[in-house]
Length: 211
Length: 211
DNA sequence: TAGATTGTTAATCGATTAACAATC
DNA sequence: TAGATTGTTAATCGATTAACAATC
Image (tube, rainbow over all chains, first blue to last red; front, top):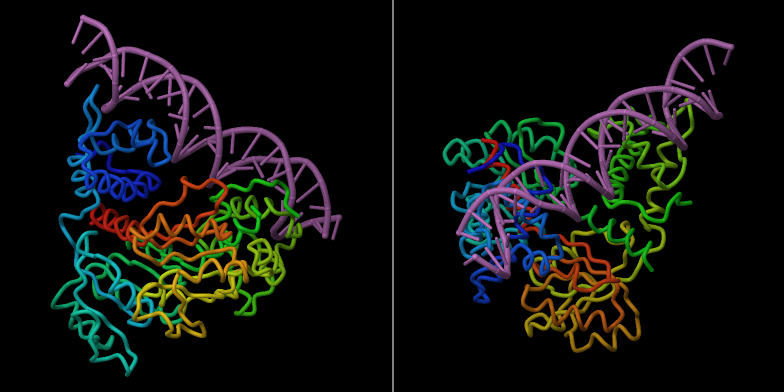
Protein backbone atom coordinates (compact mmCIF):
# COMPACT_ATOMS: atom_id res chain seq x y z
CA UNK A 1 0.00 0.00 0.00
CA UNK A 2 2.68 2.48 1.00
CA UNK A 3 4.64 4.05 -1.84
CA UNK A 4 7.71 4.58 0.33
CA UNK A 5 8.58 3.16 3.72
CA UNK A 6 9.64 6.42 5.26
CA UNK A 7 6.90 9.00 5.50
CA UNK A 8 7.95 12.32 6.98
CA UNK A 9 6.60 13.35 10.38
CA UNK A 10 4.83 16.50 9.16
CA UNK A 11 2.74 14.30 6.86
CA UNK A 12 1.95 11.81 9.63
CA UNK A 13 0.95 14.56 12.05
CA UNK A 14 -1.58 15.85 9.54
CA UNK A 15 -3.30 12.48 9.12
CA UNK A 16 -5.36 12.56 12.34
CA UNK A 17 -6.62 15.99 11.38
CA UNK A 18 -7.70 14.76 7.94
CA UNK A 19 -9.36 11.90 9.75
CA UNK A 20 -11.37 14.27 11.95
CA UNK A 21 -12.50 16.45 9.08
CA UNK A 22 -13.47 13.47 6.95
CA UNK A 23 -15.47 12.08 9.86
CA UNK A 24 -17.42 15.33 10.13
CA UNK A 25 -18.02 15.45 6.39
CA UNK A 26 -19.23 11.87 6.48
CA UNK A 27 -21.57 12.66 9.39
CA UNK A 28 -22.93 15.63 7.45
CA UNK A 29 -23.80 13.40 4.53
CA UNK A 30 -21.04 14.58 2.18
CA UNK A 31 -20.12 11.62 -0.01
CA UNK A 32 -17.42 13.07 -2.27
CA UNK A 33 -14.89 15.87 -1.98
CA UNK A 34 -12.11 17.32 -4.12
CA UNK A 35 -8.69 18.22 -2.76
CA UNK A 36 -9.61 21.83 -3.52
CA UNK A 37 -12.74 21.78 -1.35
CA UNK A 38 -11.06 19.89 1.48
CA UNK A 39 -8.13 22.30 1.38
CA UNK A 40 -10.53 25.21 1.65
CA UNK A 41 -12.31 23.85 4.70
CA UNK A 42 -9.08 22.82 6.46
CA UNK A 43 -7.05 25.91 5.63
CA UNK A 44 -4.46 24.03 3.58
CA UNK A 45 -3.47 23.95 -0.09
CA UNK A 46 -4.91 21.37 -2.47
CA UNK A 47 -1.38 20.48 -3.52
CA UNK A 48 -0.41 19.56 -0.01
CA UNK A 49 -3.41 17.30 0.44
CA UNK A 50 -2.72 15.44 -2.80
CA UNK A 51 0.97 15.12 -1.94
CA UNK A 52 0.14 13.83 1.53
CA UNK A 53 -2.37 11.25 0.36
CA UNK A 54 -0.14 10.04 -2.43
CA UNK A 55 2.49 9.03 0.11
CA UNK A 56 0.17 6.11 0.84
CA UNK A 57 -1.42 5.43 -2.51
CA UNK A 58 -3.84 6.83 -5.05
CA UNK A 59 -7.10 7.08 -3.16
CA UNK A 60 -8.77 9.51 -5.53
CA UNK A 61 -10.17 9.45 -9.02
CA UNK A 62 -9.27 11.94 -11.73
CA UNK A 63 -12.09 14.28 -12.62
CA UNK A 64 -14.11 13.16 -9.60
CA UNK A 65 -12.19 13.65 -6.36
CA UNK A 66 -12.23 11.44 -3.28
CA UNK A 67 -15.01 9.27 -1.85
CA UNK A 68 -15.31 10.59 1.71
CA UNK A 69 -16.29 7.30 3.35
CA UNK A 70 -13.54 5.39 1.56
CA UNK A 71 -10.81 7.95 2.26
CA UNK A 72 -11.85 8.04 5.92
CA UNK A 73 -11.54 4.27 6.14
CA UNK A 74 -8.15 4.28 4.39
CA UNK A 75 -6.68 6.86 6.76
CA UNK A 76 -8.09 4.93 9.71
CA UNK A 77 -6.28 1.84 8.47
CA UNK A 78 -3.03 3.77 7.93
CA UNK A 79 -3.25 5.07 11.51
CA UNK A 80 -3.82 1.56 12.78
CA UNK A 81 -7.33 1.96 14.21
CA UNK A 82 -8.26 -1.48 12.92
CA UNK A 83 -5.62 -3.37 14.92
CA UNK A 84 -5.64 -1.91 18.44
CA UNK A 85 -2.64 -2.43 20.69
CA UNK A 86 -2.81 -3.01 24.43
CA UNK A 87 -1.78 -0.11 26.64
CA UNK A 88 -1.27 0.49 30.37
CA UNK A 89 -1.58 3.70 32.32
CA UNK A 90 1.04 4.71 34.86
CA UNK A 91 -0.14 7.29 37.36
CA UNK A 92 -3.79 7.67 38.36
CA UNK A 93 -3.71 11.20 39.71
CA UNK A 94 -5.71 14.08 38.27
CA UNK A 95 -4.18 13.83 34.86
CA UNK A 96 -4.15 10.03 34.65
CA UNK A 97 -7.82 9.91 35.63
CA UNK A 98 -8.72 12.51 33.03
CA UNK A 99 -6.81 10.70 30.30
CA UNK A 100 -8.38 7.34 31.21
CA UNK A 101 -11.91 8.73 31.33
CA UNK A 102 -11.71 11.28 28.55
CA UNK A 103 -9.88 9.45 25.81
CA UNK A 104 -11.60 7.11 23.43
CA UNK A 105 -8.78 4.59 23.11
CA UNK A 106 -10.69 2.01 21.11
CA UNK A 107 -11.27 4.46 18.25
CA UNK A 108 -7.63 5.48 18.16
CA UNK A 109 -5.71 2.25 17.91
CA UNK A 110 -5.36 1.26 21.55
CA UNK A 111 -7.04 -0.68 24.33
CA UNK A 112 -6.43 0.30 27.95
CA UNK A 113 -5.90 -2.92 29.89
CA UNK A 114 -4.37 -1.83 33.19
CA UNK A 115 -3.79 1.10 35.54
CA UNK A 116 -0.88 1.39 37.98
CA UNK A 117 -0.11 3.80 40.81
CA UNK A 118 1.84 3.41 44.04
CA UNK A 119 -0.16 5.86 46.17
CA UNK A 120 -1.70 3.95 49.09
CA UNK A 121 -4.92 5.93 48.75
CA UNK A 122 -5.33 4.74 45.16
CA UNK A 123 -4.17 1.11 45.13
CA UNK A 124 -7.21 -1.16 45.06
CA UNK A 125 -9.66 1.57 44.02
CA UNK A 126 -11.41 1.61 40.65
CA UNK A 127 -10.67 3.82 37.65
CA UNK A 128 -13.28 3.15 35.00
CA UNK A 129 -13.42 -0.64 34.97
CA UNK A 130 -9.83 -1.10 36.09
CA UNK A 131 -8.61 -1.80 39.60
CA UNK A 132 -5.53 0.30 40.29
CA UNK A 133 -2.47 -1.87 40.99
CA UNK A 134 0.90 -1.01 42.53
CA UNK A 135 3.86 -0.89 40.16
CA UNK A 136 5.31 -3.92 41.94
CA UNK A 137 2.67 -5.89 40.02
CA UNK A 138 4.04 -4.67 36.67
CA UNK A 139 6.41 -7.53 35.74
CA UNK A 140 3.83 -10.24 36.36
CA UNK A 141 1.12 -8.27 34.60
CA UNK A 142 3.28 -7.60 31.54
CA UNK A 143 4.47 -11.20 31.41
CA UNK A 144 0.87 -12.32 31.23
CA UNK A 145 -0.73 -9.61 29.09
CA UNK A 146 2.13 -8.25 27.02
CA UNK A 147 1.05 -4.63 26.66
CA UNK A 148 3.07 -2.70 24.07
CA UNK A 149 2.33 0.88 25.03
CA UNK A 150 2.60 2.80 28.30
CA UNK A 151 0.93 6.11 29.15
CA UNK A 152 3.03 8.15 31.55
CA UNK A 153 1.01 10.44 33.82
CA UNK A 154 3.58 10.55 36.58
CA UNK A 155 5.80 13.28 38.05
CA UNK A 156 9.02 14.07 36.24
CA UNK A 157 11.19 12.70 39.05
CA UNK A 158 9.62 9.25 38.90
CA UNK A 159 9.94 8.98 35.13
CA UNK A 160 13.54 7.91 34.40
CA UNK A 161 13.53 4.81 36.62
CA UNK A 162 10.01 3.80 35.62
CA UNK A 163 10.82 4.11 31.91
CA UNK A 164 13.70 1.67 32.39
CA UNK A 165 11.47 -0.83 34.14
CA UNK A 166 8.79 -0.53 31.48
CA UNK A 167 11.23 -1.08 28.65
CA UNK A 168 12.45 -4.20 30.44
CA UNK A 169 8.82 -5.32 30.63
CA UNK A 170 8.58 -5.14 26.85
CA UNK A 171 7.03 -1.69 26.36
CA UNK A 172 8.03 -0.25 22.97
CA UNK A 173 5.92 2.89 22.83
CA UNK A 174 5.30 5.72 25.28
CA UNK A 175 2.60 8.32 25.38
CA UNK A 176 4.41 10.72 27.62
CA UNK A 177 2.65 13.40 29.66
CA UNK A 178 5.49 13.76 32.14
CA UNK A 179 7.96 16.57 31.72
CA UNK A 180 10.79 14.11 31.35
CA UNK A 181 12.33 13.79 27.88
CA UNK A 182 12.52 10.13 26.95
CA UNK A 183 12.93 10.72 23.26
CA UNK A 184 16.60 10.49 22.38
CA UNK A 185 17.70 8.38 25.36
CA UNK A 186 16.22 5.15 24.09
CA UNK A 187 16.59 4.53 20.39
CA UNK A 188 14.20 1.93 19.04
CA UNK A 189 11.49 3.03 21.42
CA UNK A 190 8.74 5.21 20.00
CA UNK A 191 7.82 8.25 22.08
CA UNK A 192 4.98 10.67 21.59
CA UNK A 193 5.20 13.60 23.94
CA UNK A 194 2.28 15.66 25.19
CA UNK A 195 4.13 18.45 26.91
CA UNK A 196 1.23 20.59 28.09
CA UNK A 197 3.57 22.96 29.88
CA UNK A 198 5.53 23.60 26.69
CA UNK A 199 2.30 24.18 24.81
CA UNK A 200 1.12 26.71 27.39
CA UNK A 201 4.38 28.65 27.20
CA UNK A 202 4.21 28.70 23.42
CA UNK A 203 0.79 30.31 23.74
CA UNK A 204 2.19 32.79 26.24
CA UNK A 205 4.87 33.77 23.75
CA UNK A 206 2.40 34.19 20.90
CA UNK A 207 0.04 36.33 22.96
CA UNK A 208 2.89 38.45 24.25
CA UNK A 209 4.14 39.09 20.71
CA UNK A 210 0.72 39.70 19.09
CA UNK A 211 -1.02 42.15 21.38
CA UNK B 1 15.93 42.77 22.12
CA UNK B 2 14.55 40.80 19.21
CA UNK B 3 16.64 40.82 16.05
CA UNK B 4 13.61 40.30 13.82
CA UNK B 5 9.95 40.61 14.61
CA UNK B 6 8.91 37.38 12.98
CA UNK B 7 10.43 34.32 14.57
CA UNK B 8 9.46 31.04 12.95
CA UNK B 9 7.22 28.62 14.82
CA UNK B 10 9.75 25.75 14.91
CA UNK B 11 12.11 28.04 16.84
CA UNK B 12 9.40 29.17 19.26
CA UNK B 13 8.30 25.60 19.92
CA UNK B 14 11.84 24.69 20.96
CA UNK B 15 12.11 27.50 23.51
CA UNK B 16 10.11 25.84 26.30
CA UNK B 17 12.27 22.75 25.94
CA UNK B 18 15.45 24.80 26.25
CA UNK B 19 13.85 26.39 29.27
CA UNK B 20 13.27 23.00 30.90
CA UNK B 21 16.77 21.75 30.26
CA UNK B 22 18.34 24.95 31.49
CA UNK B 23 16.24 24.74 34.66
CA UNK B 24 17.54 21.24 35.33
CA UNK B 25 21.14 22.29 34.66
CA UNK B 26 20.70 25.23 37.01
CA UNK B 27 19.24 22.94 39.69
CA UNK B 28 22.19 20.60 39.27
CA UNK B 29 24.60 23.42 39.91
CA UNK B 30 25.85 23.82 36.34
CA UNK B 31 26.75 27.48 35.86
CA UNK B 32 28.00 27.59 32.27
CA UNK B 33 27.39 25.54 29.17
CA UNK B 34 28.50 25.62 25.55
CA UNK B 35 26.14 25.15 22.63
CA UNK B 36 28.01 21.92 21.95
CA UNK B 37 27.34 20.46 25.41
CA UNK B 38 23.71 21.60 25.46
CA UNK B 39 23.19 20.14 22.00
CA UNK B 40 24.59 16.84 23.18
CA UNK B 41 22.29 16.58 26.18
CA UNK B 42 19.20 17.68 24.22
CA UNK B 43 19.82 15.62 21.10
CA UNK B 44 20.18 18.65 18.81
CA UNK B 45 23.01 20.24 16.84
CA UNK B 46 25.09 23.07 18.27
CA UNK B 47 24.40 25.06 15.13
CA UNK B 48 20.68 24.92 15.68
CA UNK B 49 20.96 26.11 19.26
CA UNK B 50 23.14 29.07 18.29
CA UNK B 51 20.81 29.94 15.41
CA UNK B 52 17.77 29.72 17.66
CA UNK B 53 19.20 31.87 20.41
CA UNK B 54 20.50 34.46 17.99
CA UNK B 55 16.97 35.12 16.81
CA UNK B 56 16.57 36.98 20.08
CA UNK B 57 20.02 38.37 20.72
CA UNK B 58 23.57 37.40 21.57
CA UNK B 59 23.26 35.76 24.96
CA UNK B 60 26.59 33.99 24.87
CA UNK B 61 30.21 34.93 25.05
CA UNK B 62 32.86 33.83 22.56
CA UNK B 63 35.33 31.38 23.97
CA UNK B 64 33.19 30.82 27.06
CA UNK B 65 29.67 29.72 26.20
CA UNK B 66 26.44 30.65 27.95
CA UNK B 67 25.79 31.46 31.60
CA UNK B 68 23.05 28.96 32.51
CA UNK B 69 21.22 31.15 35.02
CA UNK B 70 21.25 34.14 32.71
CA UNK B 71 20.14 32.22 29.62
CA UNK B 72 17.34 30.62 31.63
CA UNK B 73 16.14 34.04 32.74
CA UNK B 74 16.33 35.44 29.19
CA UNK B 75 14.25 32.62 27.73
CA UNK B 76 11.74 33.02 30.55
CA UNK B 77 11.39 36.68 29.65
CA UNK B 78 11.03 35.88 25.95
CA UNK B 79 8.25 33.42 26.79
CA UNK B 80 6.51 36.02 28.91
CA UNK B 81 6.75 34.35 32.31
CA UNK B 82 7.46 37.70 33.94
CA UNK B 83 4.21 39.38 32.86
CA UNK B 84 1.45 36.81 33.46
CA UNK B 85 -1.88 37.19 31.69
CA UNK B 86 -5.25 36.39 33.20
CA UNK B 87 -6.96 33.23 31.98
CA UNK B 88 -10.31 31.52 32.46
CA UNK B 89 -11.17 27.84 32.24
CA UNK B 90 -14.25 26.67 30.34
CA UNK B 91 -15.39 23.19 31.27
CA UNK B 92 -14.71 21.64 34.69
CA UNK B 93 -15.11 17.98 33.81
CA UNK B 94 -12.36 15.38 34.15
CA UNK B 95 -10.02 17.16 31.80
CA UNK B 96 -10.73 20.69 33.04
CA UNK B 97 -10.14 19.59 36.62
CA UNK B 98 -6.88 17.93 35.70
CA UNK B 99 -5.65 20.97 33.81
CA UNK B 100 -6.61 23.33 36.64
CA UNK B 101 -4.98 21.19 39.32
CA UNK B 102 -2.01 19.89 37.40
CA UNK B 103 -0.74 22.92 35.56
CA UNK B 104 1.51 25.48 37.15
CA UNK B 105 0.08 28.55 35.43
CA UNK B 106 2.01 31.12 37.40
CA UNK B 107 5.34 29.75 36.18
CA UNK B 108 4.20 29.71 32.57
CA UNK B 109 2.90 33.19 31.93
CA UNK B 110 -0.70 32.92 33.09
CA UNK B 111 -2.93 33.33 36.10
CA UNK B 112 -6.15 31.32 36.35
CA UNK B 113 -8.83 33.69 37.60
CA UNK B 114 -12.13 31.92 36.89
CA UNK B 115 -13.75 28.58 36.10
CA UNK B 116 -17.01 28.14 34.17
CA UNK B 117 -19.27 25.18 33.55
CA UNK B 118 -23.00 24.86 32.93
CA UNK B 119 -23.52 21.42 34.52
CA UNK B 120 -25.92 21.77 37.46
CA UNK B 121 -23.88 19.34 39.50
CA UNK B 122 -20.82 21.58 39.18
CA UNK B 123 -22.09 25.16 39.41
CA UNK B 124 -21.34 26.52 42.87
CA UNK B 125 -18.79 23.84 43.76
CA UNK B 126 -15.09 24.55 44.24
CA UNK B 127 -12.22 23.76 41.90
CA UNK B 128 -8.99 24.68 43.62
CA UNK B 129 -9.79 28.09 45.04
CA UNK B 130 -12.33 28.96 42.37
CA UNK B 131 -16.08 28.67 42.63
CA UNK B 132 -17.44 27.25 39.39
CA UNK B 133 -19.80 29.69 37.65
CA UNK B 134 -22.33 29.17 34.85
CA UNK B 135 -21.40 30.58 31.44
CA UNK B 136 -24.25 33.06 31.76
CA UNK B 137 -21.96 34.89 34.17
CA UNK B 138 -19.25 35.26 31.51
CA UNK B 139 -20.05 38.73 30.12
CA UNK B 140 -20.20 40.38 33.53
CA UNK B 141 -17.09 38.55 34.70
CA UNK B 142 -15.09 39.53 31.63
CA UNK B 143 -16.30 43.10 31.77
CA UNK B 144 -14.95 43.35 35.28
CA UNK B 145 -11.77 41.26 35.10
CA UNK B 146 -10.78 41.42 31.44
CA UNK B 147 -9.17 38.00 31.05
CA UNK B 148 -7.24 37.63 27.78
CA UNK B 149 -6.96 33.86 27.50
CA UNK B 150 -9.51 31.03 27.60
CA UNK B 151 -8.82 27.36 28.19
CA UNK B 152 -11.31 25.15 26.36
CA UNK B 153 -11.97 21.83 28.06
CA UNK B 154 -15.42 21.37 26.61
CA UNK B 155 -16.98 18.90 24.16
CA UNK B 156 -16.49 19.56 20.47
CA UNK B 157 -20.18 20.35 19.91
CA UNK B 158 -20.21 23.16 22.45
CA UNK B 159 -17.05 24.78 21.09
CA UNK B 160 -18.11 26.85 18.04
CA UNK B 161 -20.80 28.89 19.83
CA UNK B 162 -18.73 29.34 22.96
CA UNK B 163 -15.70 30.52 21.00
CA UNK B 164 -17.86 33.25 19.43
CA UNK B 165 -19.10 34.39 22.82
CA UNK B 166 -15.59 34.42 24.26
CA UNK B 167 -14.20 36.48 21.42
CA UNK B 168 -17.01 38.97 21.98
CA UNK B 169 -15.98 39.08 25.63
CA UNK B 170 -12.49 40.16 24.62
CA UNK B 171 -10.63 36.84 24.64
CA UNK B 172 -7.70 36.93 22.20
CA UNK B 173 -5.99 33.63 22.93
CA UNK B 174 -7.23 30.06 23.25
CA UNK B 175 -5.63 27.03 24.78
CA UNK B 176 -7.79 24.51 23.03
CA UNK B 177 -8.26 20.95 24.30
CA UNK B 178 -11.52 20.43 22.43
CA UNK B 179 -11.48 18.60 19.12
CA UNK B 180 -12.87 21.62 17.36
CA UNK B 181 -10.49 23.48 15.03
CA UNK B 182 -10.60 27.18 15.85
CA UNK B 183 -7.34 28.04 14.12
CA UNK B 184 -8.11 29.41 10.68
CA UNK B 185 -11.67 30.54 11.38
CA UNK B 186 -10.71 33.57 13.42
CA UNK B 187 -7.73 35.51 12.16
CA UNK B 188 -6.16 37.76 14.75
CA UNK B 189 -6.94 35.32 17.53
CA UNK B 190 -4.06 33.17 18.76
CA UNK B 191 -4.83 29.47 19.15
CA UNK B 192 -2.67 26.78 20.68
CA UNK B 193 -4.18 23.34 20.19
CA UNK B 194 -3.62 20.36 22.45
CA UNK B 195 -5.22 17.66 20.37
CA UNK B 196 -4.61 14.64 22.55
CA UNK B 197 -6.57 12.40 20.20
CA UNK B 198 -4.37 13.39 17.28
CA UNK B 199 -1.29 12.75 19.34
CA UNK B 200 -2.51 9.30 20.32
CA UNK B 201 -3.19 8.35 16.70
CA UNK B 202 0.23 9.59 15.67
CA UNK B 203 1.70 7.22 18.23
CA UNK B 204 -0.49 4.42 16.90
CA UNK B 205 0.88 5.02 13.41
CA UNK B 206 4.48 5.06 14.59
CA UNK B 207 4.10 1.84 16.56
CA UNK B 208 2.33 0.14 13.71
CA UNK B 209 5.10 1.06 11.28
CA UNK B 210 8.08 0.29 13.58
CA UNK B 211 7.32 -3.16 14.96
C1' DT C 1 48.84 35.04 23.70
C1' DA C 2 46.55 30.61 22.32
C1' DG C 3 42.39 28.01 22.71
C1' DA C 4 37.70 27.95 22.75
C1' DT C 5 33.35 29.11 21.36
C1' DT C 6 30.30 32.36 19.79
C1' DG C 7 27.59 35.04 16.09
C1' DT C 8 26.74 34.93 11.36
C1' DT C 9 27.08 33.87 6.57
C1' DA C 10 26.93 30.21 3.09
C1' DA C 11 25.59 25.47 1.67
C1' DT C 12 22.49 21.76 2.10
C1' DC C 13 18.57 19.56 2.90
C1' DG C 14 13.62 18.88 3.22
C1' DA C 15 8.93 20.36 2.83
C1' DT C 16 5.51 23.03 0.47
C1' DT C 17 3.59 24.99 -3.58
C1' DA C 18 2.90 25.33 -8.49
C1' DA C 19 2.30 23.32 -12.89
C1' DC C 20 0.75 20.02 -16.02
C1' DA C 21 0.15 15.70 -18.35
C1' DA C 22 -2.70 11.61 -17.47
C1' DT C 23 -7.28 10.05 -17.13
C1' DC C 24 -11.82 9.46 -15.30
C1' DT D 1 -16.45 14.31 -25.97
C1' DA D 2 -15.33 18.21 -22.79
C1' DG D 3 -14.65 19.42 -18.07
C1' DA D 4 -12.80 18.35 -13.90
C1' DT D 5 -9.53 16.75 -10.91
C1' DT D 6 -6.14 13.61 -9.81
C1' DG D 7 -1.15 11.84 -9.48
C1' DT D 8 3.37 13.39 -10.14
C1' DT D 9 7.21 16.11 -11.57
C1' DA D 10 9.50 20.61 -11.24
C1' DA D 11 10.19 25.07 -8.85
C1' DT D 12 10.17 27.56 -4.68
C1' DC D 13 10.51 28.37 -0.22
C1' DG D 14 12.06 27.73 4.50
C1' DA D 15 14.63 25.41 8.01
C1' DT D 16 18.71 23.00 9.39
C1' DT D 17 23.54 22.17 9.16
C1' DA D 18 28.22 23.39 8.13
C1' DA D 19 31.90 26.60 7.99
C1' DC D 20 34.53 30.30 9.53
C1' DA D 21 35.80 34.91 10.83
C1' DA D 22 35.22 37.66 15.05
C1' DT D 23 36.40 37.88 19.73
C1' DC D 24 36.45 36.68 24.53
